[in-house]
Amino acid sequence: MAQTVILGVIGSDAHVVGITILEQTLDAAGFDVVNLGVQSSQAEFASAADAHDAEAVLVSSLYGHAEQDCRDFHDTLAEHGADAVTYIGGNLSVGQTDFAETRERFRRLGFDRVFDSETDPEEAVAALRQDLGIHSTEPDERVRA
Image 1: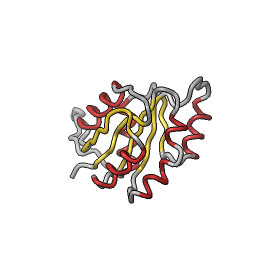
Image 2: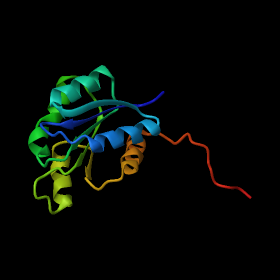
Image 3: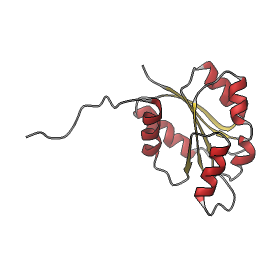
């Protein structure tokens, strides 16, 4: 049975390309993806996570205001009864110069994983598989002698 993930762009951000690529990558990897699209509220993420009994919630933000958009995000998830691994990625702060500081800031906000805008979508898939305890079911394609 496929693991369900909620995916969307939070706040007033309207950048759709990244989540479209991520949705296709996650779908190809066997995940059941619920894409909320752009300009999604915390409540929309939380409601979808609860309604679909999602194992993971992936938040995207490219316009640099993710910290404001994600304050109390995990409280909102809890209020809706959603219990999921949470990831955030993108250009998370205006003038971001040291991503290590940005990563720590979002970890303090409660996110399990924090990715920058240069992250390969396959890295997110690998992280999800690890965090959700999913072992690849693809056959070994190596040639054997």
